[in-house]
Image 1 (cartoon, one colour):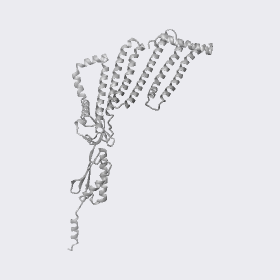
Image 2 (cartoon, rainbow, N blue to C red):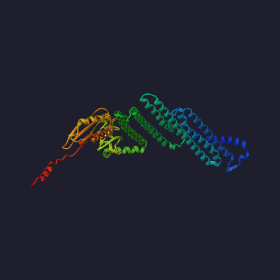
Image 3 (cartoon, one colour):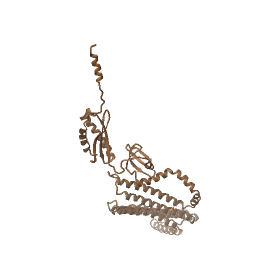
Image 4 (cartoon, helix red, strand yellow):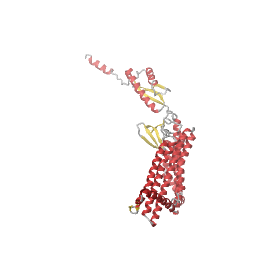
Length: 477
């Protein structure tokens, strides 16, 4: 690349190419081709500048047809041909156009400027060409790593076992992060930048390495989460174990993301000499700063440690049914600082993590999603309870939401006016329990109205005193 940036390359490549093309053009069009067109630029110069562009267009078309033909040889969208030829086309086209534009502009610049200005133009043009070629190469390597990652992902799907589904994609993503960084680190010195930029280059290289390592660790955490929860379906009816694993992996994963990010930022800051001196000066007052930070971040730290407690003890899990602040809902999201409860009417209740450690709440799916629901009905004392049980048996046992575990009807209370019937029925989860309770209440009330209307709740009144008074009025004086 240093040769590419030098004057020898510029003179040898451009001059020899220009001389050869000029002879060919003179042979084809005669000596009149050397007549001036624009200032010192002749028609021959314009034709020479146009030939590389036409050549690039021709090669571009040929490569595009070839790549498309190779990619369409198979109908499988996951085939390596589609991945490879679909990924390398763009960078190769860019590299061709960079070379074509360079060869087209070079002979024109040689005619426009001479002397010291020509040397400056040569230097700038070569630098632009080298940087553009480097970017095209970097893009090509990035595309190739994407192809490698896609192929490794397809390969991982065919390998049995959970470790393979974690390690193989991690290898692909690591290549995607490491290879471009290594190309930048090793290629930039070859571009021949001035020595005064070496400290900035070394600092930038160190930052890139730290960022690449942090990115790989982030990907390792993400893939580890996917590998752990891959075998569990949180949408299943009996998803207790899935919710346990899902909650633990999400909370621990987010905690690891924060730790990795803090370590990466701290490592980058330590590369700057000014930050090191600042850290040394702050170290003397670390006690006071620690007290102030502890008081200021008390709530944040309590939520942070509450997240660890929830991940390990799991008083709540993802998709748990809970009663909080008098509201029925499901745990929709658990973050490092707060919990989102999806209320039954599509409202969202946002609570800090510490709430579920410090305050009581109801968890209807703590040990199991199965639930025992109750329905209360008030009827008159004349209602035949045994007949009601027979009717209730038909209502519950024929309903698809009942899980066939248990049901019952009992007189649970009695007042001076009515008696209370309590109906119990089991369901697989809270949502089905609510629907079953509503269905039982509707059908049982309809049964009472149709078959025992006299047993509906009513108020009795004795009229004996009124009848006696009216009879006394009829007696003769």
